[in-house]
Length: 346
Image (cartoon, rainbow, N blue to C red):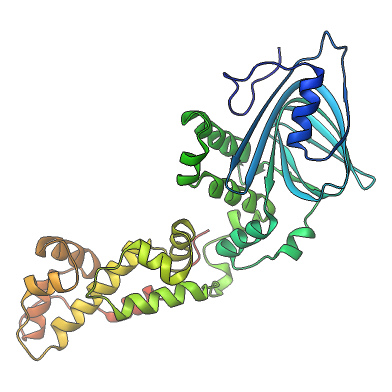
């Protein structure tokens, strides 16, 4: 018996030699040679293919085969999920096995031997570089090329990346391989992000201080933050933020988390709370808390009071007492200033 495919195993029939070579030609692009490690009677093979936007995924399970490809400059990650593999690229042999290591290949030709279940993910290198940039503020296509044709560990800081990839493959089965739904769920983005961490594991295991250095803050994030600050009394949707920044919702979420440790929604709410507090402390006119809550787009006065107390340790009514010379707890605005300094979160 051969192990299961990474996805679509239950609906995928076994293939003979001819069908197997045709399937591998589809999955490995320009196939130059194919041979089995067993007789035709002993050979078993199954193949499944999936495309989600510009991500191509093929899964193979077999009793064993050898193949040769040429003139095939693609950026691929090969993951042996059960079994082992060997690849000869430009005279260098790479060995990788299930749950321990995988291979990033960017090459024109290779000879490979595979036994068991493996999955190959074909990435768009420009998009992969942009994904790394959104996470770490570094990397380019040229830099990715320098990381070509090398094995990567699937166990980083005690985290099994093999299991993380497997969990994403299961999502394909959960929607019966519907590529439209998977695109809406941005599953391809999840694969790109895992690949980015495999290429740059230091992003995954780095501490929260970066030795006191300020992290990279994307210009797109600064642009959307400037817009938010100028329109705190107006409704600001995530879609509007995407339009202003030019970033996807997922990348935008990560940019806010990396720079401020907050989601976009939390960051907007924090800015509104501080703007409302400033009105209460500096306005020469009487301030109505109910009107102020609605002015700054809170759902209700109670919602405003709840978040205000969480942020400042006192209710809005107590702040007004402070302004009017009554008792109450003064809030140190230095705490807010400190919260605006970006902090690295992984």
